Length: 251
Length: 204
Image (cartoon, rainbow over all chains, first blue to last red; front, side, top):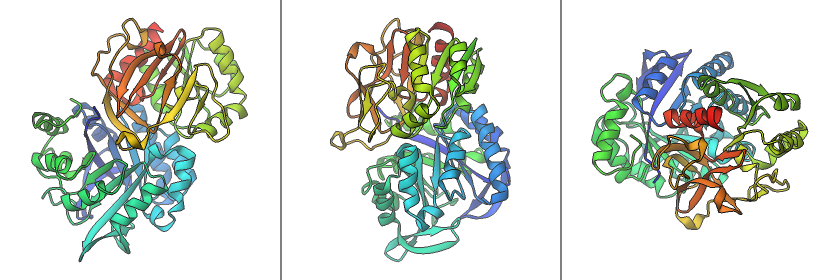
């Protein structure tokens, strides 16, 4: 039986792991390879690296970092941040990442999803969606949560899946970094509409939050950052808890 | 021992290369025919689309070289797409045939199975064939990392050395004489995956 996945997320800025609250107030959380190694030892199922200040100058640093991680960590990982063309995707995959995560550029040019899926296969194309509740819908934000788009996140998720995305990485901007639990309504709305795996992100603060996002919102994987970075919970603790509550995880 | 890792621009050779090194062999990342013949064993990794992969292998003149080395009984391991390419064809392919060294087709997970596609994440191995050198020390229910939308349907089921269940039970490890194939990613499957790579290095 396919296990539910627990995925630590490492936000990368200028080669370091950082973490903020609601996308602001960044604090240093360590060296990426050491942090990745520690999660490997805890039994994390995957890692996500998001280059949150992606720029052309940063691009080479990022590729060197991806190679470094691939040489040290024998687990799947996804890389995102500033990916704008097929060439970027090719470079990141060749450097050893399992998957790439597209966000801003996919919203601006949705055909990037279809051409990337055609070239590299859907299984390595993740579409990340940063969503915030606005009245009666969830709005998609781009540029690291800075720019509203007017687009409905649920409709965008369905479109991304149709274009060939292999997975949705769904972050609730309202819940991000708050430790108040995942946005179950948003997550459920999307898992019930698309037939590709959904990684829920934003808000994990206690063990029960993970149980709820799998059992009540149908997520396939749960992502967390600050909770793990600052050692409040370990990946192993979360998985042991889920296993005791009857959820299939890899121990 | 030198092990060739075929580099044909289809992703992800760092982890495979490092894993082989950790298991005590010397990886040779190459796209040259001569290297395939001078190495003791060959690994064909691969991420991406079937047609593109065959096109690249053809462009590099490696299709016949791979068949020749397999014909000489050199131990060969195909990983994910690299395994799928060994079959006669794939539902993913528009206009290319596979290498045909294994009989059968590669097919897509049907929407009727009621499972999300791609099959992505950690899943159990089952029906492990006793005596398969690649799987020595690996037991049923060991979890490995999958990331794929297509799976192999060998004509001869006896080449299945392990299966996985995802709406359908499919062969996820294949073993036929010197030819081995895995649908999952041993280079991304932590301790269990490294054990399988070590087995390939030492026992196959």
